Length: 68
Image (cartoon, rainbow, N blue to C red; front, side, top):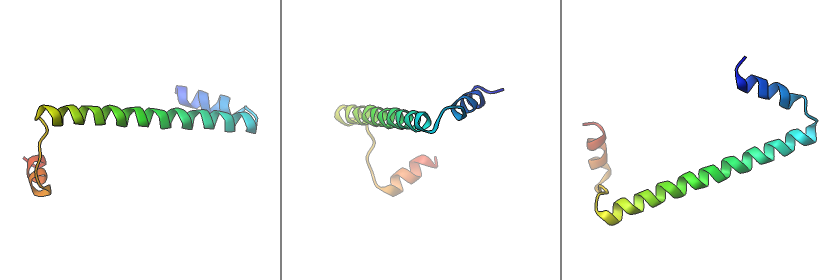
């Protein structure tokens, strides 16, 4: 049985308060991870912009570049 199913079965055996507490923890961790990922991508974009390696242009330029 996949690990996720085992986890869900175990979580299902917890009382409602513990399930809500676990949900809060998971939501907070996911929010923090998204913030961290976004900050990392922002730092990377800033480095590319500062080094001159970032591409600029119009939407049309982007569209052409993607579809080449």
